[in-house]
Amino acid sequence: MRPLQLGRQDAADDYETLLSYFPNLQLEPVSRSILLEAAGLRARYGLRSPDAIQLASGLQTGATLAVTNDGAWRKVPDIKTLILSDWVS
Image (tube, rainbow, N blue to C red; front, top):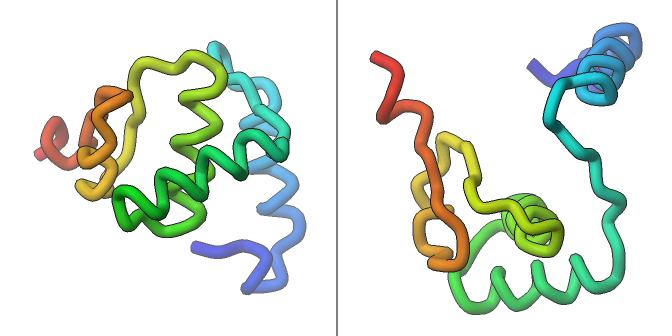
């Protein structure tokens, strides 16, 4: 669901709190260099902007694995991609 579209600020706040304290997760500010890398990923691989920003953020911070349900991420050779639906029946 989309909490903010549904007017559920409380749920959005809960998500933010969860992500802020999630083990082994680093929230990265979106910098100019991340946006430039995202633009390149978008141009080279035809990714949607939010996906390109997420992947660029990971690449710039040294991530080696991206977890998603979007098979389009597999087009990016610089990072391994784990598709959740491949592992969950």
